[in-house]
Image 1 (tube, rainbow over the protein chains, first blue to last red):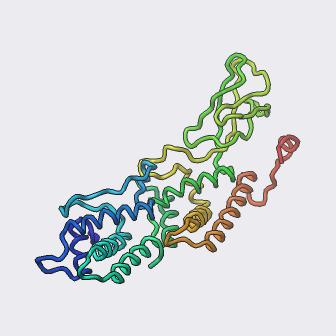
Image 2 (image 1 turned 30 degrees about the horizontal axis):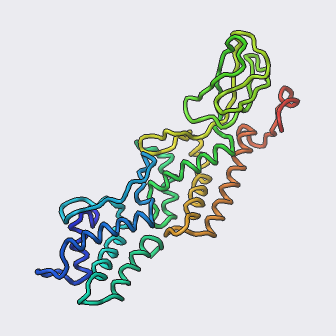
Image 3 (image 1 turned 60 degrees about the vertical axis):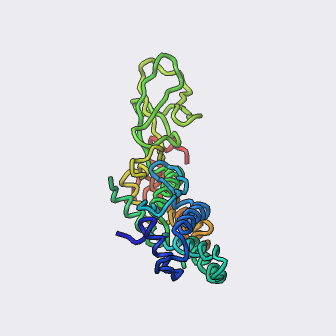
Length: 119
Length: 197
């Protein structure tokens, strides 16, 4: 089974990138879920081919999630890391106390590169 | 349902396209096949129809694919009759047929919707096998020509599309010579005087 299959997989891995793995957590789950939803919107904008339903010759909308439940995130394994880095950047950018804007920008840039370039 | 002759083409293209999705390649394959088949005319079929009264227009439809062009219409005795096809799928005779007279339309086909359930375009197996390299070049050219993708490469897109067009030209020559090695485009004596060169 490929990594990053479900919403909690993304939340857990993004917490790892943000060094927020010990309870009580600094960032609530809801922030990560929101980041995932925004990452999917960004993916839909940059890479519509990721949402191609070829058998029906149509493009589907980006899915949206309301909680860190066991929902599967249906995205090609090649682009799961791009979502992960976007989530980490998005959550980091929202933090006004532990300000690390350059780190957030690096995560978002990394995500962009994974969507659009070789690395 | 897996179609090995098309899977090989898709996999060959995917190996050179970093980050491309097989579904996207499969989607592009339809456009590549359409351009190849329309311009080369290698996929041909014969369709019979019978004159009804004095009607001049006849709807003809192949079992697979769709009609791109009409090559010619002949009688049962292989006599070529003047005919056109202003709308693909409707053969128009420019002579007055005798009621019940049987004709054969020679048509050039291309891919058509619907595709298979697994989104493969319906291409004759022999075409995909014989012109595999041409299809791969077409796919690589089209995919690499897309902007802002990990596999975008303007230089290689131009290179592969040039190879694709050369491949189409070769296939067109194959079709006109009916895949005969070293044959000429005409055959003595019947069609020499009437065949369009």
